[in-house]
Length: 103
Image (cartoon, helix red, strand yellow):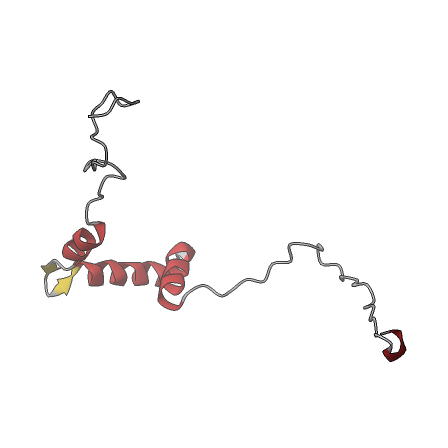
């Protein structure tokens, strides 16, 4: 072992198997399993979507927004970051032409 900042716990050229970010649980798999549960002939996902649809029909704008955003995607927004709505005045282009006599 070599002396160092870690008190000599690592061999030269060795690999620390516990290094790096810890592994996260499989959230996607857990959600798929949870939403696939079936009750009364409907999956949990179908029940949630039907409830969300009914809430939107009853006038809940947040539910309607969520259905449309996830079903069709949000429209792209154009944002003017630089001018505050004013016209950009670009400078006139300057063109240099090489004269054949100056070679």
